[in-house]
Length: 333
Image 1 (cartoon, rainbow, N blue to C red):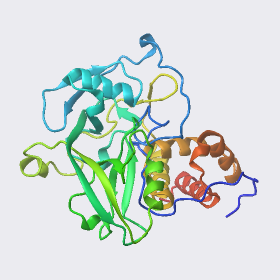
Image 2 (image 1 turned 180 degrees about the horizontal axis):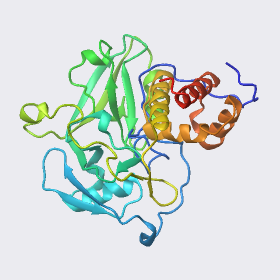
Image 3 (image 1 turned 45 degrees about the vertical axis):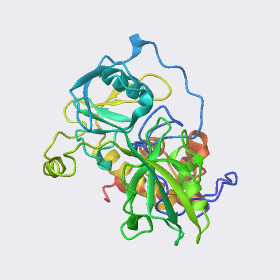
Image 4 (image 1 turned 120 degrees about the vertical axis):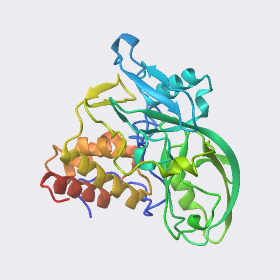
């Protein structure tokens, strides 16, 4: 639906609810790489990290998800720095860290670390495990994948649609990092770039995925897989607020999102998956922040073009985002 803004011509949208996830969070994050979780923006030049004196002096506890002693980390301001601190604590290369989950050692995409960490959250780091190469016959246009990235150059699978092409391939799992498609390296690519490549693969042809799965503990499939009841463990952001990681400028301690913001972010994240095949809570949060004070869809479109123009959001998507934010404001959940 045209918004009447006279916006510049955009690239055609990725209209499948699969091949890509912001992010985010999810791992959604802000720039091509410095923060997690879901990515808010294409390649941009960020400012250098702030001096240590300006960084929040907060201490977080962490473990390797497959099992390790508990470590203590502090002094980071974005996701790349966080991974570096985890690597130092456990004496491993930072490139081995694939992604982090909050308050659970499981590969639980609902607990993926994005651009915010609750001040009382426990961080579990998932590191590289078995590598595998899988041939996939693209029998349908939609593969059934939703992609996200870790904010530091790795794109991975966040969701597999039940009954889809990928769902029938047992070797491919949620949490697998996509290293290459048909020999083309994807290291350093954002989620939406990987989604576009998957969408553009011709139907009726076979292609090859090179994947790396997160390292698993022996008991992850048996005893530890039972876990607790949903909601029985520590919750994100309980207590004192959240640490928001930023690619430009220092991390900041913020209040917990309001009920309106939480619902609006959820609805916008759903729209990102529906239109672009990506999920990225940090990107969704940025869009809500940009749109909550705008008076009409045209103002929102202008703000998105200025801040997130590399995503080339179609007018129909912007209009739906405006409606989702408006619905959340008046309590239409």
